[in-house]
Length: 291
Image (cartoon, rainbow, N blue to C red; front, top):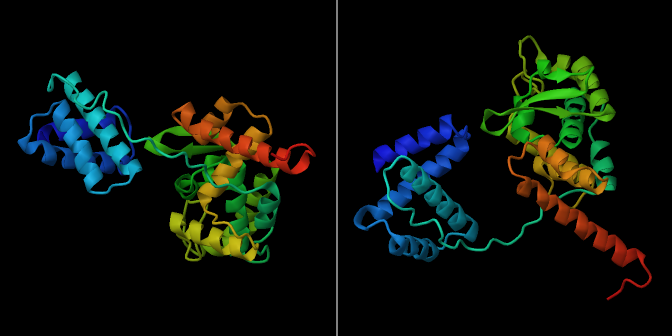
């Protein structure tokens, strides 16, 4: 089974183009499964025993669902390679996951946050550019810190992005992000770059590429300064981008493309948010809405 696992991970890497993080999770899950099945016949009975074993170890429902999904995918690969006759996990029911709506900011909260960075300091100029770009494009924090200056096309208002699984896509940005980027590249970045040469767009005070953790810390700092009580992360701005687009009437598939989601179902979670917001507005504004 060890050699089968190596072939499977190689398949996920080369044919499915999975990220290193995803490959690591799959490898860990399948190693755990192989260890469990070492003295068992890999049939439906063993699959049910595996599910019970995961529940006894008190894994979260989300973790159990992921491990079962990994197992199901692994056996599909084995069957394709004619290394297994059946998939014992194919119709095994997975735990129902609670719907977790992404956290987002309302427009007035975002305006407050975007106006917080000090525009007289290089770091503040940089931070405002980061905030404007994340909210204006919906990029993931990993995509933000990987950006290089030559990825930006100011004439077209586009940014070339290397997303999950090394998949390249083009995202759009508007006038506010454009203004903030021009200000940062023209005035903020030259004061941070020092004598070093770097192609990285967003850099720290030493002239090195900014890390995801540094971006997260900066956003937390500006959130507190803006007086926003919510927990705000780079992903909160990404969620806000998607929510506000859909609230404004954007097409779901267009938002899917901009976010870089493989599956439309991943994007559909934002429609629940906009419905909840509509209910809140209706209940608070309509004289006959009280129930």
